[in-house]
Each structure stands twice: as structure tokens, then as C-alpha cells.
Length: 466
Image 1 (cartoon, rainbow, N blue to C red):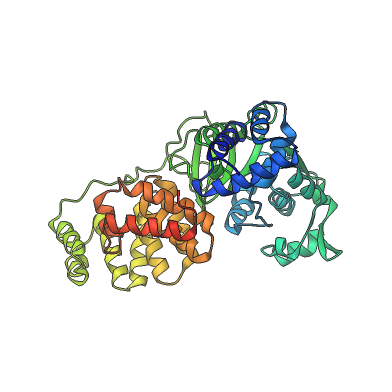
Image 2: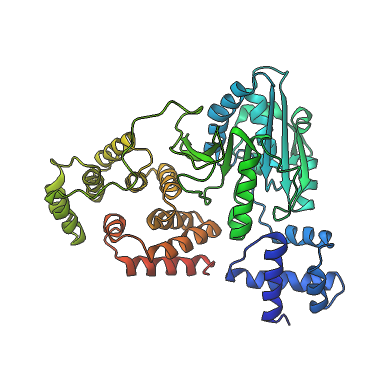
């Protein structure tokens, strides 16, 4: 019998030693792992937990990391990020490194190696000539995952998103698996590493051109998250790039990093001067000369009576009347946004998309416009495009509840319950202080209470309710 107090202590120890955070929904799994590991080590629960508090039991921490980590990964996962890497990021770094002819990359939370090897493949694909030195380091807390990565043999399922030309060039069938070409394997090293631990050499300043850290931050405590982000930022060379998972957001102006948007994805570029808050979004690296002033993220509310009248009609669900008020007079940023919302409500997705893209041409940092365009694209059947813009809206404004809600609902539809739980739980938290105007614009006729109820019901349904 596992006591709740034992599981609570175990959970606390894992947070302290590994920097991991667990949902209340994970309690049953934690209890099972605690029972199994204490029995395997021949200890009663109290002795096992006491032993785990000591700093010299790294083998057991590694075993716990193996048992508790979800390692679903594959080559070229989230292809839009690798398209950005191959078409924008690596060409930029190659220009900057032309004299040294060296590229260094890091994969944090590399699991069984697919991500680290994909980085190496991409570098070999775009390097100007064979004389370049490419090195990739993969880090993972689980020694079992490191062992699998070193073997470098993968099933066809792991290559399901790998382009055919790359599969034929860099993989060889062997014993019903695919073995990676030695010319790629020799570029990659792997190291067991607990991101909650300090290691100065690993995080030495100004050493990596590219860092990938995807789908790891969501498992970490806020303190470990913040420390890891600082370390990764500092370890990038000036002008180096950081890629995070789609559920991770540093906001529109993180310290020392400039958000970059290309290939329907967001990533970050380390500021080329000092590690300080980036003053603007970098659209095409390297940084361009100072651009004209942008319309601010949250523009002043227009005073035009037409906007107020149309918003009131929308609140009363008189969509046709509201559209009639604005359709031929909308001119300000907020009026155009509301017009796009009303056109979407009317099923005029092509017109609504035009409005959304016009807004973003004026100000690519306008989170509400990204969300409006996403709703339009989702309604028109372009789910992938919608997800991309919902993610951009959430990146640009981490306090914006509505894109988190939509991302959670779409993840539920795809059966990705872990991701859905993270997004819906965040949406539930943010809905408490979401601006009433945004709820009217993007709530689809539902008020704050109804949206909160929807969030809770979906969280319960996907089994990760906190």
C-alpha cells in the first residue's frame, strides 16, 4: 500500500533533484514507479526516499528519468522548424562562420537521438563544401535513451516524416531497420545530463550556433525552466538561434533574444550586441536596419461610434447587423480586426483571410490579428495553417487565453491529450483575467463562464485535469 504522503515526498524529491513538475493526474504513475523502484532496490519506502535525498545516487536518478520520460520522437518532427533551419537559419550561420568554417549545435532532451541526427543531416545538406566542421551534441537524462541513440538504428515509423531523398542518401536498410550513415553518426556526440544540475563547460558562453530544446520545458519547474533558458541564451553565439517546442513561449520580447517568424513557425535569435531585451521582432536575419515605427501590439481603442455599435451588436449576437455597420467604413486597426471576426462569423472566409493578412502586413506582432486569421483558416478547413497562427498569437502574448483554448481543442481532436491538457489548463488560468473585449471578439458567442466550463469539461475528458 502506497501512502499519499510517500507519493507527495517522492514528487517533491523529483522536482528538487530533476527539476521536473508533475500534474495531480500523474500521482498514480508516481505511486507505481515508487513501489517498483523501492522493491527493485530491496528497500522499504522510507529508506528508499531517504536514500534518494542524497546527492550520490545518480544511477537511480537516471533510472527514474528513464521510467518517467515520454520519448515519442522521430526524424524531422515538426517539419516547419527544420525547413526554417535549412532555408534560413543555417545559411545565415554559414555566412557568419565563413572564416571559421565551423558549425556547433546542441539538442537538449535528445531522447533516442532522432533530433540530434536530424540537425547533423540538415547541416550536411546545406554546407557549402566538405571542408566544414560540423558538431552536434545531444543531451538526455536517461542513459537508456543515450544507448539507443548511439546504436543509430531506427524503424520505418521513426522515419515517417523523413523526405525520400534524405532517407535514400543517409539511411541503409539492415535487419528490418534503417541504419544511419556513419558520415552522419560521426558528427554527433551524446551525453547524459540532468538539466537541473550545473555544468559550466557544457553551458560555456558563446559556443553554439543553434540550440534545440523542444517539448522539455513543460516538464520542468518554473525555477529550472528560467535557469535553463538563461543558460541556453548565454551559450548561443551572438546571432545564434534557439528553437523551442510549440507549447513553450518566451513572449514577444524575451531577454537577450529576438523572436523570428518564418516558415509558419516561431524561433529565437540571440541579440548580436548585449544580452538584453530585444527591441523588435527580427523578420529576416541578419538584423535589418531600424524599421519605421510599428502599430503597437494593443492599439488604442478607436473612438468611432461605428466600432462601438458593431461590438455591441456582436455581443448581442446580431452578426448581420454588426457586419452592415462596419463593412464599408472600417479603417482603424481595431475596426479591421472586428470586421475580420464578423466576416468569419458570416462564413466569408476568403474575405476574412484578406483582412487578417492585411493587418499582419502592417504589424506582424499583432497577436489578435494572428488569432483572427487562425479562426478564419480553421473555419475554412486549413487546420495546419490555423494551428500555426494560434501558436504565433500565444507566443506574442503569453497572457492571451483564446489561442491556448483553440490549440487545446484541436489537440484533443487529434488525440494528443498531454498537449491538450497543457494548453487547456493554461487557457483556464488565463480566462480569469482575459479582457472582456477579447471574449466578445473571439468567444464565438460564449461568455467567460461558458468558456471556463468548456475548458474544465475538456480537461476532464482528456484525463489530465489538474
